Length: 168
Image 1 (cartoon, rainbow, N blue to C red):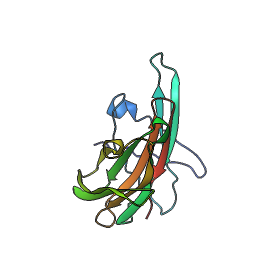
Image 2 (image 1 turned 45 degrees about the vertical axis):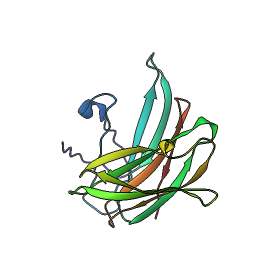
Image 3 (image 1 turned 180 degrees about the vertical axis):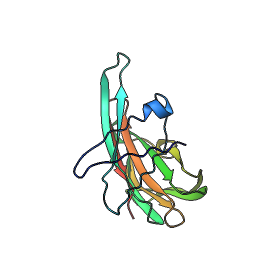
Image 4 (image 1 turned 90 degrees about the vertical axis):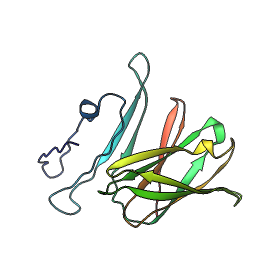
Protein backbone atom coordinates (compact mmCIF):
# COMPACT_ATOMS: atom_id res chain seq x y z
CA UNK A 1 0.00 0.00 0.00
CA UNK A 2 1.38 3.35 -1.01
CA UNK A 3 -0.17 6.80 -0.95
CA UNK A 4 0.79 9.35 -3.58
CA UNK A 5 -0.36 12.94 -3.37
CA UNK A 6 -0.17 15.41 -6.18
CA UNK A 7 -1.78 18.71 -7.10
CA UNK A 8 -3.51 18.80 -10.47
CA UNK A 9 -4.36 22.18 -11.96
CA UNK A 10 -7.88 22.78 -13.35
CA UNK A 11 -8.39 21.16 -16.78
CA UNK A 12 -4.99 19.48 -16.58
CA UNK A 13 -4.00 15.84 -16.71
CA UNK A 14 -1.43 13.78 -14.87
CA UNK A 15 -0.10 10.29 -15.61
CA UNK A 16 0.96 7.85 -12.91
CA UNK A 17 2.97 4.86 -14.12
CA UNK A 18 1.85 2.12 -11.75
CA UNK A 19 4.22 -0.56 -13.09
CA UNK A 20 7.03 1.05 -11.13
CA UNK A 21 5.07 0.55 -7.90
CA UNK A 22 3.58 -2.92 -8.50
CA UNK A 23 6.13 -4.48 -10.81
CA UNK A 24 5.66 -5.26 -14.47
CA UNK A 25 2.62 -7.43 -15.23
CA UNK A 26 1.20 -7.24 -11.70
CA UNK A 27 -2.42 -6.31 -10.94
CA UNK A 28 -3.63 -4.00 -8.22
CA UNK A 29 -6.29 -1.59 -7.04
CA UNK A 30 -6.08 2.19 -7.12
CA UNK A 31 -8.26 4.27 -4.82
CA UNK A 32 -8.54 7.91 -5.84
CA UNK A 33 -9.86 10.77 -3.76
CA UNK A 34 -9.87 14.46 -4.50
CA UNK A 35 -10.06 17.44 -2.21
CA UNK A 36 -13.41 18.45 -3.78
CA UNK A 37 -16.41 16.35 -4.86
CA UNK A 38 -16.69 15.65 -8.61
CA UNK A 39 -13.35 17.34 -9.32
CA UNK A 40 -11.60 14.37 -10.98
CA UNK A 41 -12.10 12.13 -13.98
CA UNK A 42 -9.84 9.09 -13.77
CA UNK A 43 -9.10 6.50 -16.43
CA UNK A 44 -6.87 3.50 -15.86
CA UNK A 45 -5.09 2.32 -18.99
CA UNK A 46 -3.73 -1.15 -19.64
CA UNK A 47 -1.26 -1.87 -22.39
CA UNK A 48 -0.68 -5.39 -23.72
CA UNK A 49 2.82 -5.94 -25.01
CA UNK A 50 4.08 -8.35 -27.66
CA UNK A 51 7.23 -10.39 -27.10
CA UNK A 52 9.23 -7.83 -29.09
CA UNK A 53 8.00 -5.00 -26.83
CA UNK A 54 5.48 -3.71 -29.38
CA UNK A 55 1.92 -2.83 -28.49
CA UNK A 56 -0.66 -5.65 -28.88
CA UNK A 57 -3.67 -3.89 -27.39
CA UNK A 58 -4.67 -1.00 -25.18
CA UNK A 59 -7.87 -0.25 -23.29
CA UNK A 60 -9.07 2.14 -20.62
CA UNK A 61 -11.47 1.82 -17.72
CA UNK A 62 -12.96 4.81 -15.93
CA UNK A 63 -12.79 4.92 -12.15
CA UNK A 64 -16.12 4.32 -10.44
CA UNK A 65 -17.60 4.61 -7.00
CA UNK A 66 -18.99 1.41 -5.49
CA UNK A 67 -22.70 2.20 -5.12
CA UNK A 68 -25.04 -0.66 -5.90
CA UNK A 69 -25.88 -4.01 -4.41
CA UNK A 70 -27.01 -5.81 -7.61
CA UNK A 71 -24.76 -5.19 -10.61
CA UNK A 72 -25.29 -6.54 -14.12
CA UNK A 73 -23.31 -6.66 -17.34
CA UNK A 74 -22.80 -8.87 -20.36
CA UNK A 75 -20.49 -11.74 -21.24
CA UNK A 76 -19.82 -13.26 -24.65
CA UNK A 77 -18.08 -16.48 -25.71
CA UNK A 78 -18.70 -16.12 -29.46
CA UNK A 79 -15.72 -15.82 -31.85
CA UNK A 80 -13.37 -17.53 -29.37
CA UNK A 81 -13.77 -14.72 -26.86
CA UNK A 82 -12.94 -15.15 -23.20
CA UNK A 83 -14.86 -13.24 -20.56
CA UNK A 84 -13.20 -12.47 -17.24
CA UNK A 85 -15.23 -10.93 -14.44
CA UNK A 86 -13.07 -8.55 -12.40
CA UNK A 87 -14.47 -7.64 -8.98
CA UNK A 88 -12.87 -4.82 -6.98
CA UNK A 89 -13.53 -4.15 -3.30
CA UNK A 90 -12.46 -0.60 -2.31
CA UNK A 91 -13.60 -1.00 1.31
CA UNK A 92 -11.63 -1.78 4.47
CA UNK A 93 -13.29 -5.21 4.91
CA UNK A 94 -13.41 -8.37 2.83
CA UNK A 95 -16.81 -9.00 1.27
CA UNK A 96 -18.56 -12.00 -0.25
CA UNK A 97 -20.43 -11.65 -3.52
CA UNK A 98 -22.82 -14.00 -5.29
CA UNK A 99 -22.24 -14.37 -9.04
CA UNK A 100 -24.90 -15.62 -11.48
CA UNK A 101 -24.77 -16.25 -15.23
CA UNK A 102 -28.01 -16.14 -17.27
CA UNK A 103 -27.73 -17.10 -20.93
CA UNK A 104 -29.53 -14.96 -23.53
CA UNK A 105 -32.17 -17.72 -23.78
CA UNK A 106 -33.05 -17.19 -20.10
CA UNK A 107 -31.38 -20.40 -18.92
CA UNK A 108 -29.47 -20.01 -15.66
CA UNK A 109 -25.95 -21.32 -16.37
CA UNK A 110 -24.51 -20.54 -12.94
CA UNK A 111 -26.98 -20.11 -10.11
CA UNK A 112 -24.79 -18.76 -7.32
CA UNK A 113 -21.02 -18.74 -7.04
CA UNK A 114 -19.88 -17.19 -3.76
CA UNK A 115 -16.69 -15.20 -4.24
CA UNK A 116 -14.70 -13.62 -1.41
CA UNK A 117 -13.10 -10.34 -2.49
CA UNK A 118 -10.39 -9.10 -0.11
CA UNK A 119 -10.38 -5.62 1.41
CA UNK A 120 -8.79 -3.10 -0.99
CA UNK A 121 -8.41 -6.02 -3.38
CA UNK A 122 -9.62 -7.64 -6.54
CA UNK A 123 -10.70 -11.07 -7.69
CA UNK A 124 -10.88 -12.33 -11.28
CA UNK A 125 -13.29 -15.10 -12.32
CA UNK A 126 -12.95 -16.70 -15.77
CA UNK A 127 -16.60 -16.94 -16.88
CA UNK A 128 -15.75 -19.34 -19.72
CA UNK A 129 -15.14 -21.96 -17.02
CA UNK A 130 -18.92 -21.91 -16.41
CA UNK A 131 -20.21 -21.30 -19.95
CA UNK A 132 -19.73 -23.13 -23.24
CA UNK A 133 -18.51 -21.59 -26.50
CA UNK A 134 -20.82 -19.60 -28.78
CA UNK A 135 -23.08 -18.15 -26.08
CA UNK A 136 -23.74 -14.78 -24.51
CA UNK A 137 -25.79 -13.48 -21.63
CA UNK A 138 -25.93 -11.53 -18.40
CA UNK A 139 -23.58 -11.73 -15.45
CA UNK A 140 -25.17 -10.63 -12.18
CA UNK A 141 -23.25 -9.82 -9.00
CA UNK A 142 -24.98 -9.37 -5.64
CA UNK A 143 -23.15 -7.85 -2.70
CA UNK A 144 -23.63 -5.59 0.26
CA UNK A 145 -24.41 -2.04 -0.94
CA UNK A 146 -21.37 0.05 -1.79
CA UNK A 147 -18.79 -2.73 -1.57
CA UNK A 148 -18.12 -3.93 -5.13
CA UNK A 149 -17.19 -2.51 -8.53
CA UNK A 150 -17.33 -4.94 -11.43
CA UNK A 151 -16.18 -5.15 -15.04
CA UNK A 152 -16.23 -7.95 -17.59
CA UNK A 153 -13.12 -7.99 -19.75
CA UNK A 154 -14.02 -9.60 -23.08
CA UNK A 155 -10.89 -10.53 -24.98
CA UNK A 156 -9.48 -12.79 -27.66
CA UNK A 157 -5.83 -13.67 -27.26
CA UNK A 158 -3.91 -10.46 -27.86
CA UNK A 159 -6.28 -9.33 -30.65
CA UNK A 160 -8.48 -7.13 -28.49
CA UNK A 161 -9.83 -6.41 -25.01
CA UNK A 162 -13.29 -4.89 -24.50
CA UNK A 163 -14.04 -3.74 -20.93
CA UNK A 164 -17.76 -3.78 -20.17
CA UNK A 165 -18.63 -2.29 -16.77
CA UNK A 166 -21.32 -3.76 -14.56
CA UNK A 167 -24.14 -1.35 -13.74
CA UNK A 168 -26.97 -1.25 -11.25
